[in-house]
Each structure stands twice: as structure tokens, then as C-alpha cells.
Image 1 (cartoon, rainbow, N blue to C red):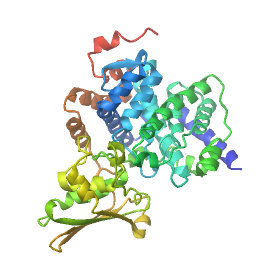
Image 2: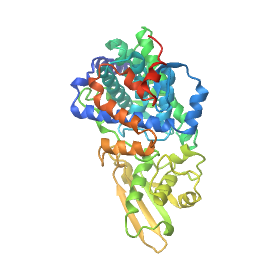
Image 3: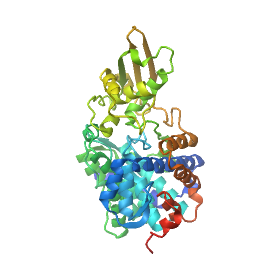
Image 4: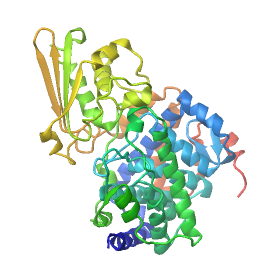
Length: 457
């Protein structure tokens, strides 16, 4: 029965995806899309600058092609660009997310759509529609899926979003678009959350798998090899958790989840952000002094209460440690790509951070991801701050284009032109006649040199 319901809902999604028109979307939706495009491209470039990501690109030996490896100066084959850009995008935990989807819709789908768009030299209107399709379908599958305890959301419920975006870009008919989405729902990764807390980079690879799986599903549908059988009810439901097909079509065409997401200003898991924000607020209080802190108590909701590790072994595991994030914020005033992981003072303070679940905060999910922080000092004084959501959430101090530009240029001091190009592309996207050349510029090298590497079609 659940498979039949999932098949019917997927068919409705396929019909919507095949017809979605960016020009008919509300202005607020297009404005938000422009900002998400800027954030995705900029954060991908930041991730691409990491030594480990550069080493991966070198080891990959990707063949030349039409798609940019953002921020690297290279053009490679479509599938390689989709995988490697997706990994770079999530490598510093700076990628946009959505609390209602319970994860990262854009990161699941945008790398695949943008790589395919560069290959096809698609119109701006088609790319805008495809990106909206990717985001909305991924978010709806995220809403519909309740993963088992311990499962990580990367590479599972979001794969249908990548397929939906690629299907729209390929101009697939409703039935074929639905078949692409259904096929992608059967290609979910079963990843454990502890891979992130233990610092295993396989967690980043799950997003690369999502991108290439979405491409594969759309191509299978284009070839007539895909069917709609309600696969999500089995893969995301029976095996990985529970699945509510009704969530796939609720308010379809009138509710745009892309307007309800969040942008990050800290290089860490989003569950740690309200605690970091609270500590940064408290640093401005007259009684705050780093040398006198005896204890920091962080009360969080059930989703964030498990990030209590104090024995991080690398940057990834540190980004999933609330004690690391809180101690770094308290001592340095920032949690960014340049934050030092092996700082003895941070480790010492992190051991005095206590993370606990508060039932009243859990009860406020999903609309709020609230956190309370109490900083205790050696003279008996305490400072307390409670925040309903992280700064940057659509519901709490949302970030503007100026804010996002400022963050990206701080993180990419050597590539300000790339950030400006990404911003211009996002703003102008729906009206551009063709976008292949503009996308290739985002590799970060002279346009003539890049175009000379593009194989003839």
C-alpha cells in the first residue's frame, strides 16, 4: 500500500518537475535561488582550496570536459565535476541547509545540475527551473523521510532531488521525470552519523554519490530504462527508516521550501551554530573573560545533544563537536575554515563544556532549533543566553546577499572575482540565453584558456 501511495505521489512530482517554470515563480523565490546559487558556488570554491581536496582532484585524474571544478582552474568531464564539486561543497560544513528537510537539499542536487548544464550549454531559464526542481524535490523527500536513529542524511533522501533537476534539464516528459525520481530513491546511501563525528571523509563522498546517482537516474529515464514503482517506500521507508508519501505533494506548487532554509557563518554542523552564536553574543557582555571560565553548559534539542565529543582527531570530527565549536568561539571569536583544530587552549576549555538535552527545546522542533548556553566563571558569576535558531536561518536574522558576499570574500581572499561572478550568475540566471561559458568561468581561470579545453559537441 505504501509503495502504491509513493508511486502516485512520485508521478505527481514528475508532472510538476517537467513543467516547472522559473519565470512563473514568485520574486521572493527567485531572489532566494540567486542567493543559494551564490552560496553553493562560493562554498564549493572554499572547499576546493583545502589541501586534502586538491590532493583528491589530483588523484582522481579526471578527463578534460565541459564542466568546471569550481575554484580550481580546471574543466573536467560532467560526472567527475558533479562528484568532486559536491564533495568540496560539504567539506567545511558551510553549505546551505533546511531544517524542515532535516538536511541539505541544495548540496544534494545543485552540483549535478550545474555540471550537466555546463555540458548542455543550457539556457538560464532551464537551469533556474532545474535548480528549483532539485531543491524542492529533495526537500520534500527529506520531509517525508524519518531516518532510523544513527543514520546520516547525506546521500539518502536527497538523491531524488538531483535526479529531478537533471530530468528537468534534459526536458524529460512527466512520466520519464517521475521514473528518474523513483529510480534515484532506490539509490540511497546508508551512512552512519558516527562517520562524521569520527572524522571519516566518506561522509563527504556520500554527496558525490548523490550527484552522480542523480545523473545516472535521469539518464536511465531518458533511455526508457526507468519505472515508477514507489521505490522510496522500500528504500527510505522499510530499510532506512519510515516514509510518508503524502509529504511529497503537500502544497505542491504553492509552498517553496527554498525560501525557508538557512545559510551558515560557522564552519561546523548546524546543530552547533546556536551555541556558537550564543557564546559570541556573550563575549560582548562586560563580565565575559576567557581566562576565568570554569564551565560552559549547553542545553540543546535531541538532534544536537549527541555532538559531545572532546577527542576530535581532524577537522571533520571537530566540526561535529559542540565542545570544540563553543570553546573556539569563546576563545577566538570565530569558527571558520581557518580555525585551528589542534589548539591546546581550545582542547582544555572544551573539556569543561557540558552538552545536555533539554526536553522543552526538543518540543520546539522543527520550527526552532533552540539552544541555551550558560557560561560560569571562577568568581561565581554566570552569563546565560538562549537563541531560538542559528543566525542565518530564514526565521532568525537571515543573511542577505551582502552578508553572504562578505563571508565568502573573507574565506576566499585570493578569489574575489570568482565570488562576484557567482553572485552575478545567480542574479541574472533566469534571463541568460546560454550559461555554459559563465559556468566555466567559475573554474577560476581565463575564459579563453578554459574554452580551449572544451571538447566539441
